[in-house]
Image 1: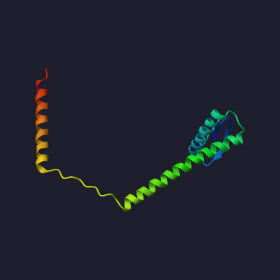
Image 2 (image 1 turned 135 degrees about the vertical axis):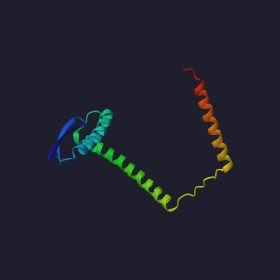
Image 3 (image 1 turned 120 degrees about the vertical axis):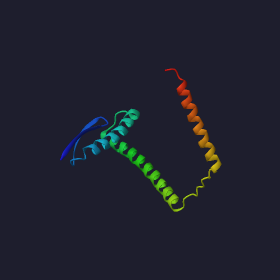
Image 4 (image 1 turned 30 degrees about the horizontal axis):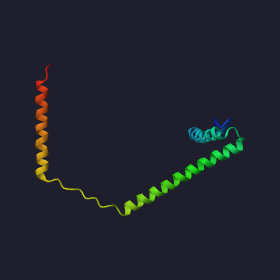
Amino acid sequence: MAEVDFSIGHKSYKLACQEGEERLLKRAAALLDNEAQHILEQAGRMPEPRLLLLAGLMLAERTTAFEDRALTAERELSRLKTNPARVEVPVVPASLSEAMAEMAARAEALAQKAEEQLPR
């Protein structure tokens, strides 16, 4: 088993985890520590159990908000898949396409002529 050292608030911890889970544990601890630091900045020093409880509740609240947003997005995606909006693409008249191609050719010819006239 691997061991990971980390800090939350004002205390250091060492926790065992499965091999390969170290990065995940460190990331989770960093999130909890970030919340704990915000609490300590606002409220000052407090007992460890209370700090961990408040930080955990703040993360749980944020997670719930993300879950709600994900559920709303999934519902909207499902709605769009079952009833896609009709999109109409205008047809570009052939005469306009030809005129644009001719303008592009003229622009290229002018650019080449300008390059030829540049001093070397």
